[in-house]
Length: 298
Image 1 (tube, rainbow, N blue to C red):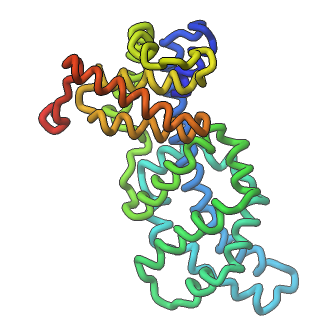
Image 2 (tube, rainbow, N blue to C red):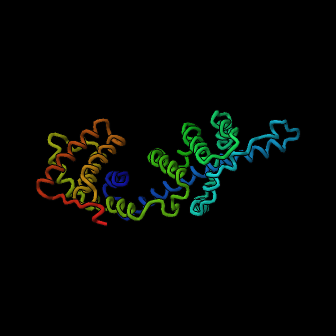
Image 3 (tube, rainbow, N blue to C red):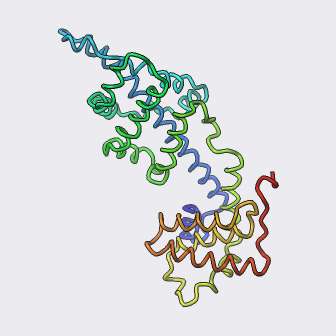
C-alpha cells in the first residue's frame, strides 16, 4: 500500500523494480526491529548480574550492595533465547549491540527493579516455567512499551516502528510462548513474500484497467477530491478480486476497510466498503470472480 502510494505520488517515476527492492527492505527492517527488541529484553534481564557486580565492586559496598538478587539473569527462557542458533546468527548480522543506549537500558532495569512484579519474581525460590515466561512478558509489555523514552528511542532507530508495532508485539508474544519458533534468516515465508510482491506488481501493471472498473462506481464523487490512498486501496482490493484466486472476497473487503480506517480519513472505511461491495456484486454477476479453496490449490 505504502509503496503504491509513493509510486502514484511520483507519477510513475519510481520503477516497479525499485519498488520490489524497497518492499524487500521493508520486510528486512521489520526483522531488524524484532531482533533488536528481543536483544534489548535479554540485555535488561542480564543487567541484574551487571548491577550486582557494579555494586559489589564499590569501595565500601553496603549489605544491600553485596546482596543484589541475580535470579533474573539465570532466567530459563532468557537463555533459550540467547542460545537460539537462528537468533544468534541474526544478532551477528543486525548488530543490535551497536544501537543499544546504555542509559536507557539502565533506566528500564531500574524501573523493573522497583516493580512489585519483579520483587515477587525474585522472592519466589523455585523456577516455574510459566513465571520465567511471565517476567519477560512483563518487561516487554509493562515496562518497555509504555516507556516514552524507550519508544522514542525505537522511533529514532526504526522508521517502521509506528506501522509495525502491533505486529511486532504479537511476534514477540509468540516467540516467548514458543522460543525457537522463528527462522530469523527468513522471517517472512516464501509464500507471503510472493504474495506481497505479486500484489505490488499486479496492482501497478493493471492500474488502468482497475481504475476503469472503479471510476463508474464513484458516481457523484469528484475523483480529484477522493483521498489518493482510498483509490490505492480500492485498486488493491479489486486486484485481489480478479487475480488472487485463493483469497476469499469477504477477507479482501474486510482487510481494506481496516486499512482505510487505520491509514486514511475518518470516512474512508465506509467509503471503501461501499465501493468494493458494489464492484464485487457486479463482477460476480458478470462471472468475473473465480475463487478456489486454498487447501485444494495446494
